[in-house]
Amino acid sequence: MARKNGCELKIDLMCSGLRVPALVTPAVSTGMRRTRAGLGSGLELIVRGRSRDTHVNAPVTERFARSSPYRLEEREDGLVIFDDRDGARFTVEVPPPPAWYGSTTSRGTTMSRLGVMQGTYLAVYVGKVCSFWTMEPPKRCAFCTTGLNVGNAEEAEKAVEDIVETATAAKRENGVTFVHFNSGFHSDSGVELVAPYVRAIKRGVGALVGVQLAPDPDLSKYDRLIDMGVEHFSFCYEFHDPDFFRKYLPGKDAHATQKRFFDAMEHTARRLGKGRVSGEIIAGIEPLEDTLRAIDYITSAGAFPTICIFRPLSGSDLEGRQPPSYADMRAVFAYAAEALRKNGVPVGLAPNLEVSIVPTPADILDLGPDTPEFRLFVLKNRLMKRAAWPYFRWRMRRHDPGAF
Image (cartoon, rainbow, N blue to C red):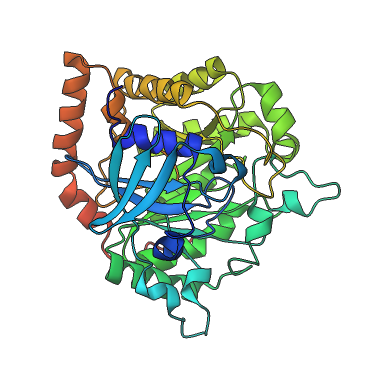
């Protein structure tokens, strides 16, 4: 059995989980974070590799992780993950929690309750808890635990000035280049909700900004956010099969609709250009052929697929379901890598942007076919990343983007 590369290990850890023996727990307890939304709540790790390091949020508390073939050990020279099936070992590191996690803003709010590092970027949930959790009867997504997080592990509402101070600290101490805002569904539009935060980050911090919201039928609102400086949009429609969309996303089906997600994704991809928008899907619940159809659709629109490996989070409606197999998920990501090449979607260009809760398009380039065409695609991305640095430096300048 060939030794897994960093991306393959990331995929397998997300499918299998990681056992952390009691003796090791004190060494890694600082790496445990309850993260936003519904797809990440594990141990932040960095897998050391020959060519690049891989950031991964490994499941450790979920039920399925108890029988994982992977276990974490603390050795004299550091932390190591062992695969009990073949004896393979992987050198890993638990990144220390940022110093600013323990700091408070001028308004007295603990910064770790405002934003969280998910890899090398700052993730911020804005607005109240998703309305799908408070409806009677609830219409929450079956995989999600946002309603257990917002207001408990993090502030229920976040002042703009608090977010500016937190993002400033993250940029100063961690070199953060990208701030990502997401929110649930609200009766009032999420687009208007996020605009003050976007403007404040552009004016007061200077960073790239991403936005993930329920889709708005008024597509001109996305044009205004683009004019304000939003670099990236993500649209989480989760399932390509309409029946699965309806079954597992009752709120989105009733109040957002799958078509609205498609319309918003296609519009913003046309406005921003290839590789600046993502369609987010969950792999491991609907049939694999539907996941592959989703990848084809997303890449044909000029967007890139953000593929979340289904994780049965404790407290979610699907907590008792098993995660998918490594073999199936590796095949999905290899397919996605080739789909990116076929459609000429550039990936991994932004500086210092590593994501721990999903295998990223930059991660999965290691899974592409060994063909001249794919090797050329990888080379082009590397050259484009170098050439794009002056552009991103200009985008990260502090400036007033104007009002929404």
